[in-house]
Image (cartoon, protein in one colour):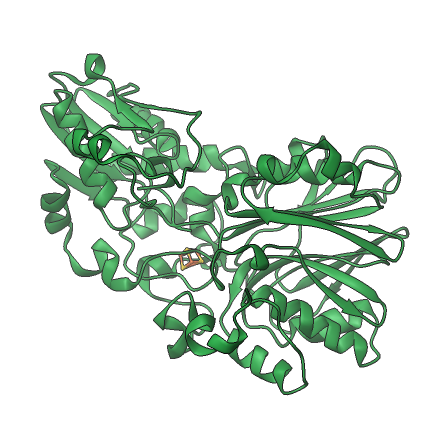
Length: 494
Ligand code: SF4
């Protein structure tokens, strides 16, 4: 999903989110003797921001796999009784936002596939770009699909290799080598747990250890899921690496011939939680550096700096620190309104009720306001925010964006709109400023965004800002995120 103009603003007027939607969160824990289902539950709880459509946990109890998954938030899908019915030594969990395959119960993960060695349960974050080819190749080997997801295709590909006589590790590696695109995977088997990232490591995956015996390992999309269960961060799974976690500990294999790091820079800017760490640095710190750089690159005279909460807050504080302009809270977020699929009444719409963000007239009236957000996708929410600020008495509204203009869609697991719907793909900065109704608008430069990472600039995917896709995207895939439904309606699950 795409971020910031955003999910936070999802219910500003009852519209769909005007931010990129994150793909998914994955979690795995190998801890014999521990209550692994509860650990997985809390791990997923910490990763809820990465997907709110469905959640699932699969546990392995010897050769038996126990699975519970359903549509809804983690707290809606699980309760104590359900968790008690998920015994075992290892658990694999998933929170989902649909990228390939529509949002339906049958597409909830982990995807479970039977093999000659027992079942496997797979949790996937990312998006393959060769799903159609992979499914064709599997169908030619008489594989049947229950869902429309690329994740199930990966699970079936592993099952195929295992059923051809390979072991778990060899079978998984052979399957990974057939996949193109973005995939961070956690896979449970009766014999151990697998974690891997694609050749470019587009989506994150970290390894943690639980206190006590050294063989108790955790895999998670972000370090915040380690913190919540008291696990220590060990290291990242490297691009093109597979880890195999068993009673004997953790073994590492590199299956990709030419790994080339291309972490999604949008994970840093918006998707991942600010308390998660990338390269031992919190994303809160990174986002503050973005704001500082933004203040240097795009100065403007004003009375206060405010943020679009919550994702714009660190950058707004950074902007305030460098500019010397006071930081204030001008928009209050209703933290107890989760995602709702209930549409507001017509009267609520007409009265412009703001269910999730409410402007503070006391702070804004008579002020020249700089408002900092992390991105603009379609621009629809930005326009509503600007109007709300002016209605609350702001005399000037200057918008500053802590990333460059989003001009290209993502094919690697983030749900951006079609290019034609991305406001910066078709309009100049001045035209966008006119459309959303600000006095001035300025974006951070690509150089500033990358320098603030304090890492080598070539280590990141920045395709949605410049169209330079590190993994080639087939023309067919560019048509729609629901590619499988369109191409193969007969295979769509119920
Ligand atoms: S195109 Fe690249 S940088 Fe943009 S959201 Fe997708 S993976 Fe991230």
